[in-house]
Image (cartoon, rainbow, N blue to C red):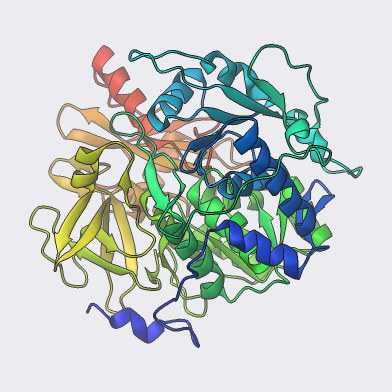
Length: 571
């Protein structure tokens, strides 16, 4: 049923979306011309207007071109937490006709070295608290004699704090400026100072030129740069605001990290295209988030499931006025039904889920806002052809059968930077068109909605039974004592693999035992799916974008199994 989803298309929207044939930077120019004095970014109660954001971006572009020697098509590393400076840097790099390489601020020197060498970047924008991680890479000559980074532009977040606040400000954000020592270092405030006369040249990059190059997570080998053009970036930022019917009077709580494509498209570029206001937090803080929603009358919240779980676990959450919220959306991992129910009870709103990936510049699927389905990836958005196919034969499968999701659409990357072999492996030709292989297993229902089964490589094989960890996790969230859960494979002499759950207890359920939770699981799911091992932990490791790092937990388990005798007990 390849077109069944069209019966549930958001009312009033066309199936095809005509995209602006412009540089993404033009979006800022248009919004600043329309709403010069409007708040573009509110950062711990300090306001940056659209006029200020535009002026600073243009001054930064002048510095990049004239002081740092950035040429059209050069890559520039952007290594910051969410902040007004992140937004200004992103658009300043684009104004210089260069390419943004967004980098997770959790990365350290050895990881950063790969991004620098692989992208060929000569300039990086770095916060002062992380300068020790990036500074060793200045003039870091590689094996072929390439000199590496030559300029570091050093940001002091506190420069953007112009108004007193009672919000909890992270120490790295409130820290006073540091004295800079050594060659190749320039203070951000000097590069964007109104007093300098470094004006950028003409804006020449067009829709088919490279715009941003986010790196994949590197689960197989080193991370790979995804080449996105201004057109593919425009596709998700424009498509997102149209899908949800947002206007220039929307107020977004921008807590998803901008370095990740979901936050970049949905919480930065989308609202900026509209001329909306972004309330920005450098780091996720559930109390600060609730206070900002109340204080600034936030209408749109984009948050992944782990954030929502934490948000709802705030014992003071009922004390806040959240009535301004008009929409809550997210993705990254299925929202547990019990959590979605608590969110709806609190706000009266459905959690509208979507699906995408770095290679597709965020969303390829989103639930129709008027008819969302729980724990569902949604339906293919504007101009996306998405199919569920047999991973071996690539034959399209009928509704209800599990296969790999492949997608063709305007938001799909051009390919991987400097890696033709990986690019060839990532795409397949079907009906004469190139489809991206996602590596995700899903089913399509009779209405054309896509439902995730799991990652192709995450399946647990327990005595020949296929166990999908995401399904088990979702069921475990129904237990009142489970705050968070991550399911992995553990070695078992008899079954080959068995199901293990790492669980964070909910406050007030400290007496919950592993055996009690295992017994409950046996009552609520098939025996082969039920965890045989439960381990309670204080917290689950999360990536910079807030996703649970199940691969890290799985690798730890495999390492432990290889060095000890197999265990079959509970703990």
